[in-house]
Length: 114
Length: 114
Image 1: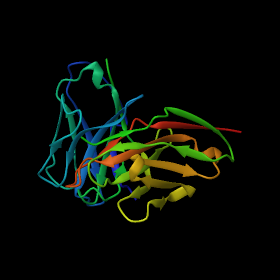
Image 2: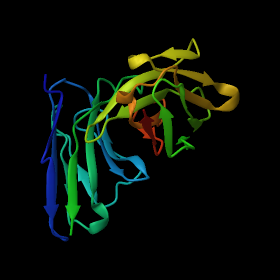
Image 3: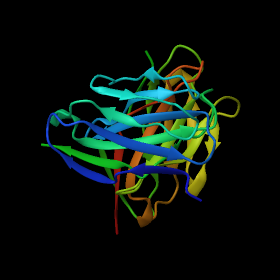
Image 4: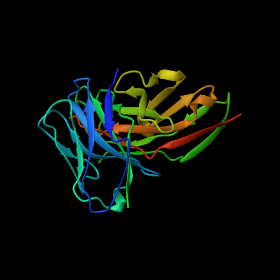
């Protein structure tokens, strides 16, 4: 049972570089989400997608973009990384976007921007 | 806007003692509320959720939570804590009931002493 797969698990990146964090789910869930987790701040929603072909902005979308070309994949792109984007990034999915479903999380991607 | 407050950043409990983690929410209508647990280096796992009905909700691993509308609270409880319960706990509320994502509190770190 794979669930949600995130890649890479860890990455060190120079400021100004472009980076894409990958997220793939095999549960055929409609909704997918990207969160970042920072010490003392909990998890904050970056972007979400209620269904393939649609995306929306969360609490902290600036500097990030997403796409949802199909049901399974939801990549997160940092166009020009900055040190404040150093964080642990979690991808999650839920069966529906109705808010009543459980979120399933990946293992996280630890990103360090120098 | 919906929000969640977890007043306690860090709690230490003796093994075998009871536990209560506090969560207060801000939401105009009846909220959808969740508790998640995160073990070190892992993603988040759902403990329990409340949508409607019985205000005392049972979850996995012996946890329960009680929804109190008058106090805008959804506190997590366990009668006897085990060393394996040491983790970070997050309370969350649905962003809006039209359905998008969860808004998380900043988390409470639980340490268990022997």
